[in-house]
Length: 292
Image 1: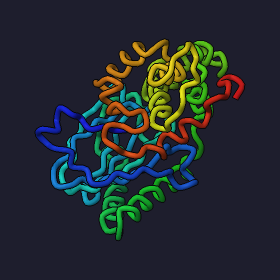
Image 2: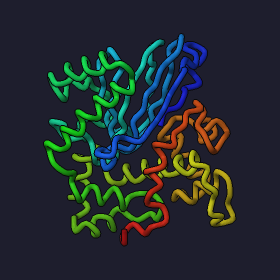
Image 3: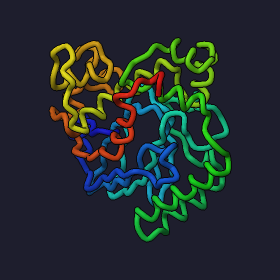
Image 4: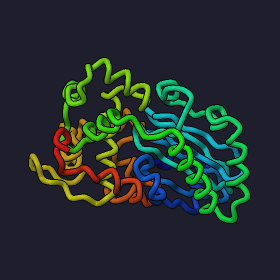
């Protein structure tokens, strides 16, 4: 998810004319959370990228694509006016084939050519000459499909670790390691290499993403502890209370929950529709993580 940075509005304006998220093609659904197309308007657009647990590809049509590594805090990007960007947000632990571990890319934004080499030149041309941004996004997804088929499947232990670390029924990291028949140090090393963060940092990120998914989907709080509204959703996502959520929100996004969501629980302040992003995130809600 990204949100307008209000401190930059006075200098750059809102600038967005269109932003559309959608599910990936079926062959990528196990590794990609969502894809999108964004078009800026007559002025640059200030965008706040938030930790989501996975890496992202940002591919401006006619420009040089970037790989955004796993974030542990917010990053501000100013997108030029009259720019069209196609993007891919990967699930945690499901990054595209890369020459190094993801711990080297945490909180980094690097040129895609720096990690993929000359194949990026062909991709840049394919996206640039595509008749529509939708066709350019299809070309990018087709390349990713070929790459995943070439390298084989994902690390099954990390895939299971991510599932268990989802926020709906919080468990301790030591219990996750025991569930996977790993020591805590083995799980940490494997998670750093494959996800880019420690299991604890990933769990905190997923918990916050869980709150956003509940808020943006219009979910009704379960009423535990007599809480409703934002406080109730915070408890449902695994926070002790609304104050706990507020502290984590400031740490992960740099703003309060109200600033992030614009005072509305069914959309973010930028007005984007994030249903394609939050729908797969809610898949495991209501299931015990250690029983599947």
